[in-house]
Image (cartoon, rainbow, N blue to C red; front, side, top):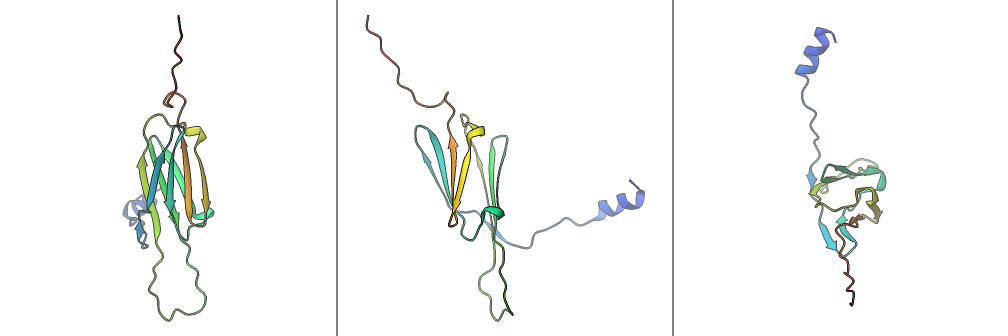
Length: 126
């Protein structure tokens, strides 16, 4: 890399997003087979939603795209982004995680691995 390019990158200002973000409201349910996260993400579409898992941290990022038609005469609503992270407990079958988004509501299924599911112990007579 040239010295000029290196100096430019060292002095380049950090990219800052000017849009505010909020943590979406999330309900978490548990049954014998899974944890279920239900997140309220109004205005978020499948294309503007990212669900990432790195080690034991699950992160949701949803972006709302602005729709502008004509000149703005007044604006009280400001578009926001949603961001929320969770630390997953052990015993989640990571390869089987699935998600559905419908009408701005995300259902994220976190199946339990067989090792942590409750099981009934058979009692033998004799």
